Image (cartoon, rainbow, N blue to C red; front, side, top):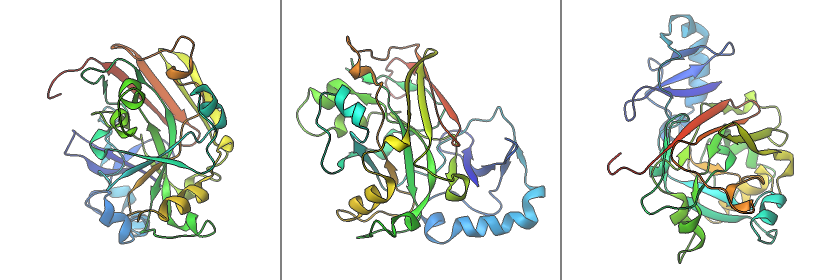
Length: 287
């Protein structure tokens, strides 16, 4: 299944994208795609419900806004420097174990919503990433069982303000958590939709110029490793997001660096997970 949420911000309803690209409203079956949905077997219940109710579901028009595919999770855990060439372009050593940082869930936005430059920001950058969504509570899980705790996958543009991230004291979270800095979607693809998440092409363009293009086969630490590793330090809850890192081609890595400005348009995609598009806008208070 491909889970979507649609409607105005704060008032989204749960839906599905079908194999032909059409979209349907499934709010008659489930309230929303939140922690409780994943924790209580909501995906299995929805799949069973569709067998007899699919034809009666209201159609969602292609002009209707898509929101984030899941309700704000308890946390977004990001893996830094998980592609060797990205570590190289960042001037950092290949890590011996996963580098972890948090991203505030208040930064989550829809896949095609604008990305707003932060107040005082001057080096805002792009990062196409494969996001893994946790399907059930995970604590101290082994690599061998880790994939049993995965609900599915989606696109995440890990927008980063490099000046906040690298030139200010403290952790990376400051440069990662500004409002609108986590566009996700267009949909959450359940595991059955993706044959092998470690063989997916991913790419990103800015104003039509392809700047990132790689494959998840280049992971330094694969998904079972990352899920197991993170679960040794914290409990992952249903609906939590793990963002698995970005490949080379970020703005920071160019000489001279390239950064986003108002009016720029990013498009990004991952094989089997669709395409998202964000226009960059200037900072405006209470946007």
